[in-house]
Image (tube, rainbow, N blue to C red; front, top):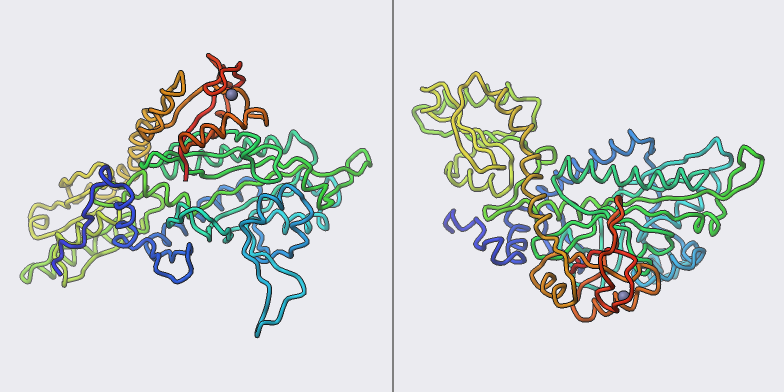
Length: 486
Ligand SMILES: [Zn+2]
C-alpha cells in the first residue's frame, strides 16, 4: 500500500456523504462495524475532543449554579405512564429490559432511559420541600438510547447519544422563563465562541414540541448536505411534570405549590458531528482550537547527520509550549510529507516543523490549519506567535461559517420559490398561517411535497409577516423557517 492511499479521495463539495463516511474511518472518528445496528464505536480521535467538550460545557453549567448528579440508566415502566403526552412521544423509541439471566422475566419492564424527566422528577418530589430549596438545578453527563427508525449515521443520528441533560425546578414561571433564556445564552457561548457553529434558535411549532413540554426551543445548524441538524434544545415544561410527579413546595405565603420545571439537552456527540461537517475541507478535519486533542504537533525533520541536534531543538519547543496540548511526532517509519497529511487530515490547529535549515536560520516553520498557510518565524518569537494563532483560530472559523450560513437563508414569496430554495439545499424563510394546531395541515403539505419541515419561528426580535400563508393563503401570524432535516 502506498502512503498516499490514506488521504480522502473525494471532494466535500462534490459528495458530502461519501466525504463524511471516509473521514469517519481515515481520521479515526467512528466505526460502524460494531454488531449492534445504530450504535457506532467512537474512536480515540473523536473521543478526546468530546471529552474536552464535556469539560467545557460542565464548567459553564456549574458556573451557572447547576450541580452534577448521576441517575440510574434504567427507568421503571410505571414512571413513564405518569405524564400522558410524554409517554405517547417516547414509548415508540424505548429500548426495554425485560429479563435477567436464563430467560427469567423481571417483575417490571425497565426502560433504558431515552431522556430522564421521569427518573429525576420522582426524586425531586422527595427532595424539594420549601421555597428555600429553590431553584433546584442539576445536570447529568451520560448516555441515552432511542430506537431511531430513520437511517442512522455516526454522530448525526444514532441509537445511543452521548449528552448532558439539565433538570431545573423553580418557584415561579418567571424564574423558569429566565432559565430558558440562560440556556440559549449557554448554547451561544458553547456553539459560537468555542466551536464556531452558527445556528438559529427556533421556538418549535406546537405539533413538533418535546413530548410533555409547554414550549420547546431548539438550535438548528445547517449542514453542507442542505439539511439542518437540531443541536441543543431547551424546554419549558411548566407544571405538567410537577403535577404528574407531585413535585410541590411550601411557599413563603405558607401555601403548597407545584414547581415550574425546565430541561436542557446539549448532545455532545451530535454537536461534534456538526462541527466536523461544517469546518472540514478536502484535506480532512479542521478542529476548533479549544477542543482539538492536540493544539500543536511538532514534526522534526530527521536526517542521520543532524538528527540529534534537530531532536534537541524539538524538545526545546515542547518545553517552551508546555501550557498547550502538544505532541511530538518522532516516528521514523513515515516520511515528513506523510505526517503532514495525517495531522492536517486530523485537523490539528498548528504544526511546527523543525529541520536542519531551521537550525541554521534560527527559525521554526509553522503551518496553521485555519488558513492552510505555512511560514517561518524567528525562534525567539515562538510563544508570541502561538498565542496569536490561538486567539485568531476559532474566530477565523466562525467568520467563514457565519457568512455561509447567512447566504443559505433565502426568502420565498410563494410555494414555487420555496421549492427552489429547498431543492438548492438552503433554508427558506416564509410567511405562515400559524404555529398553533391550526397550522399543522399546512406544515404537513410542505412535508409531503418537499420533504421539508417548518422548524419554527426565530427566538428574539419578533419578525412581522409581510404576506399571506405560503400554503393556504390565509392571513399569516408568523414568519417561519423551512428546511430538510436530519
Ligand atoms: Zn397556512
